[in-house]
Amino acid sequence: THFPYPTLFRSRKLIPVGLTAQVVSAVPYEDGILYVDYSLDDENTLNWEIIRHAKEAREILLKGQCDFYDKLPSLEVLEGVPIVLWEDATDGKARLSKISKNGFEDIISEEENITIVTSDLSTNTKEICFAIETEGETAEMVVAGIDGIIGRLTLEHKLTSFALTKDSLLCGVGDAQEKGIFSLINYDFKQDKKDISHISGPLYRMKGSSDNTILCVDSTFRIKRINADDSSISNIDAPPKTTGMPISFSTKIDEMCVAEILTTNQTEYYLMRM
Image (cartoon, rainbow, N blue to C red; front, side, top):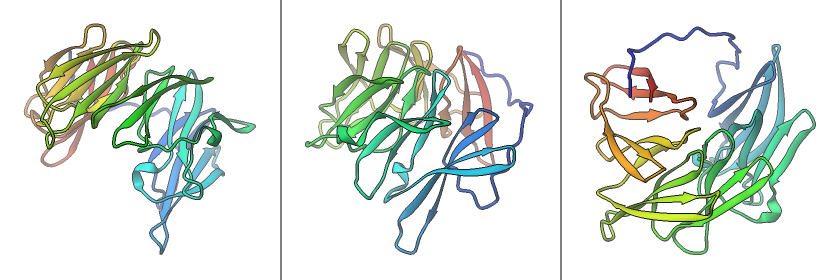
């Protein structure tokens, strides 16, 4: 794994979204972008909008409400098609939808009657995964492609983090307040096979990948690499003078991702090549 020094990336295009915009998710779309904006009203309800911005024109595509910040809509791109995972507080039902010039087409409709745990999702660029609520205290993971649900995985323990690779859904589970036992679940959603291995502690901040290796951190922000081919976990050295500092990752594509590190005085960005 190689960490170059922080690099300035040349911008191809700048798109103004307004000084008051609270952008929580954004993806490129045609000659502009799609993004999620929100505001908080006097009753502490979050009012969100999915907006298309192109050629200096701003168009609201969809509006809704939610009660929690972690349920604001999340945008992604699957096989070149923008998709959004969203839930409207008016009915509490979640949808996964494709976005096109003709509007929104449901991949998972409200008729599926699912409720998301949060709108956090992970992608390998062809499929996504996210967690939904069950009748018990644990969650169920859903893997979906552009045409619908591919697989489901019911969890028996508390979820700490998850990520999607080319062939597998990886989930870190466990609870220090219960038995202090932690596991890595490796679910091959293409073959419908599950493997569970015990690990020494919880895993956090997993991020998806277009191949079969992902990055995450432990409770001390030590960087870990997981190989979904054999569920092996190895340590990765952090950039100089950043060991133990808060770090998060972008989705890894073509063996590269961006690492965001919160240092003492500033936020630094590194391009990682694996």
